[in-house]
Image 1 (cartoon, rainbow, N blue to C red):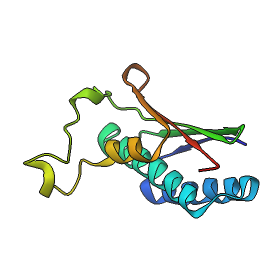
Image 2: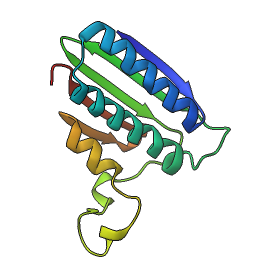
Image 3: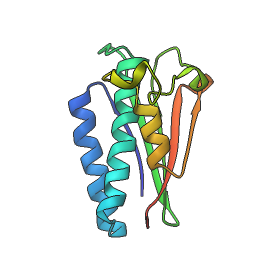
Length: 133
């Protein structure tokens, strides 16, 4: 399965994520734990791209690329922002960030995926998830 989708808004992104998970489930009989991982990683990646990358600018797009092969899901989420240094993202598990509402997206993506990287020059968050997990 290969998908490349462009979107502008979060509600549109949520519907596309649901469709991707549904299609993967039909092909791989995903466990509910695996479905949750995919929803969380894709949802956080798309939300970060729309909010922090594109600053919710409706003239900008977010591109989602997903490919599944050999029981692995490979995803990339690309925005039109300036990019950031992933090393500058503070650890939300430390004071004074514990009470902050946001700031956990990258940590969550790293937690549920088998591999995560952010390629600043490409403005791309990329992750893999084992579909048999």
